Image (cartoon, rainbow, N blue to C red):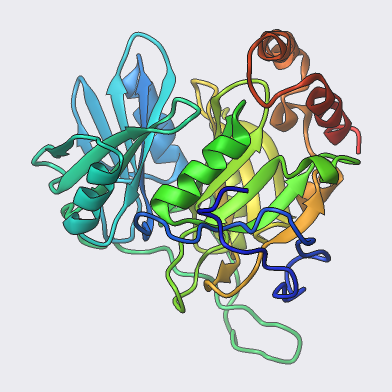
Length: 381
């Protein structure tokens, strides 16, 4: 543990969100003196060759289009703010980076100075200032401030529910239509890294993020965590259980991103709309354990995994990290068994995953042979 890390937080675990807290000497899940503290995730960037196909899926998934040109697509939710997804035309489909929002431009300048990184004005359509960084896994990371706030759009209201003897819907039926679930906002992104610990510390030390939950490979807690669910530190103001999740794996890659919708009915009816149009569900519907979200995962036409979610946890800065084993059965409280597509063990991706594992074992990183054994246990545990 570096001297920039806070002292261990043993004894401060509330037990409210995980059966286990940290043991003495384990990673504290936060930095003692971060450079800045980002307040939220801003947007994700992708490159794709077919923007018309991308926009068709985006509309079915529940996004609203801000900008549609032959070279760029900007997508947003109903909440005010900047676009939450930016897609540029490219020769191949790839994840191109993540942007986080700082409180103000002073924070952007402070971070840029600390990391000897340049700053630049963002395009007029978005506005504001950015410093462009690269995390230890090679993922482009922008930290931005001063962006234009798009006005709110009409929201999809949660349904009025009768629960037991609490009867609020009288002389009225419940008939949610099969329509796209209106995306409210970008919630989080999940990334895989061959340099998990180094990358985790980079986000904690530089962006001031804090860990909500750690997972460790079965039987390998003594070797440290291999996944972390990380939230923004807003002090006494609650933040999403995770804005970023990092996992150790055989490749540096995007895993999935998640977008909030109004409630379970919006999520379920929106899923039926997607299924009716031939899109592929990866896994769902269910409720997660870490974060508690209702979830439903889909594959877009380029193979990227995207999630509708509702009813996620919100923690303030006082909640200490929970610790739990990383198992397939531990990914949900209820719902169908986790799919091979979601785990990356179906025949379509198995060969690619095997090549990634063999390649990672030849490189100098944290994905060792023993870690491989632990990862293989996840899918069957």
